[in-house]
Length: 227
Image (cartoon, rainbow, N blue to C red; front, side, top):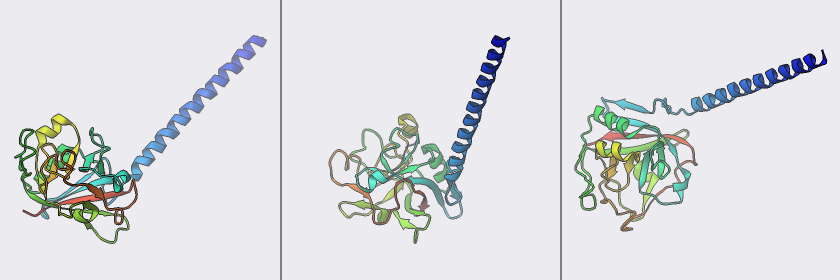
């Protein structure tokens, strides 16, 4: 009789423990889901990170500030968070390269597709010219990319829709916006050829900490087709 009572108590204790774990798991899932829903700005979320305005010939992308590059230099403007270079950019993007490529095409941008692994150090990226601007909650205005990224030579960015979709899908770097001409990035800067930053040390790029908000801040980058 005593043994049966003991076994009954142990079974009840085990049941309570399993119930507690189950409830805890539910709470954790709800917490994660709640955290995901908080990642929203300007009507965009990680699951819906792009907006195309075909009439205005523009694309808007949800990004997050990477505070490391408010002090360190980088050649990566925006990289998709799941790409192999996702930790190397000033802005972490929530859309993959193909999605941005397709969105720019919908906005009537024409890819240059003039760069290869063989000509990259002697060729300036072509394709539709784009004006990029950034805004975030409580920003006093929408800032041009030239204002939020500092070129050590004082030169202006000249962004083009390079295209490079096949290379982007093969390399899986996640590169969306590169700060020198790039055979992999969807958009890149024709002011410099590939290697200007990391190989030849011609220029350094760093986020403008006097303007940009802190690490982790959500923002949107708008790509406007101008040529």
